[in-house]
Image (cartoon, rainbow, N blue to C red):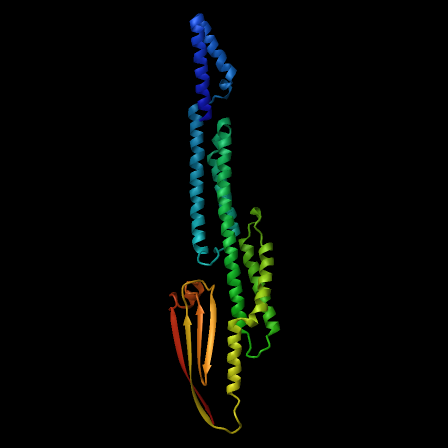
Length: 319
């Protein structure tokens, strides 16, 4: 547009010079003055075939729109899966690099005709940089979201592992807990290898280092967690109930009521509470994991009920 405007200015200046010469001299002198003005402006050196230039500009714009649309569609599919707390299937890093390389190479091939045009080459470069920036920013955002999902799932799996191998005694199983932390760290690092994109500076090193600290903190805080305390309490009660006098006979009845409340969410909130009256006990748990894909899979593909109550009649007979 600026070049067209420049040509209009030059033509206007040449017209004024021709009019001035026409009033003062002959027609030949007027044409000579107009030609001099055009040469002095330098527009005759920059002028190109207008249809060729217009077509090259249009091709660059169409190529950018096409490749941007293709990249956005792929990014949207990945983002839909990531929003459910998962990571992209396969090797995300390799897929992201392939997406970026394909978008850039396709754009370069489709706009190659405009690379040699002086007026178009700068615009082509701007469109190329804009396309590259758009894809890289989207990929970096997906990478960060997947790292967060992977951190949450790793910590959740570690908590379940520690709880499953906890004994009823007050002393923690140090060796088993240390092995669980090592396994969790190894699994996280293996998953990060599929997410990293070295060409964009997105490597696993920082995430693995931060995850190691998180796992260590989780192990230190686990004995004081509500789940661990509740399990130890049940173990103590079980041992206490076995302490009877030698040769005594008794029949004891008890009601254990267990309730689980599972609102919408992905497991960010969990808690347990227990209360015992004589031989009866009430245990209530809360976990907002109704939207967790793993929980839904365990329930056979359906969401768990909001409230689930399990009564259990306990009969202890000693002869």
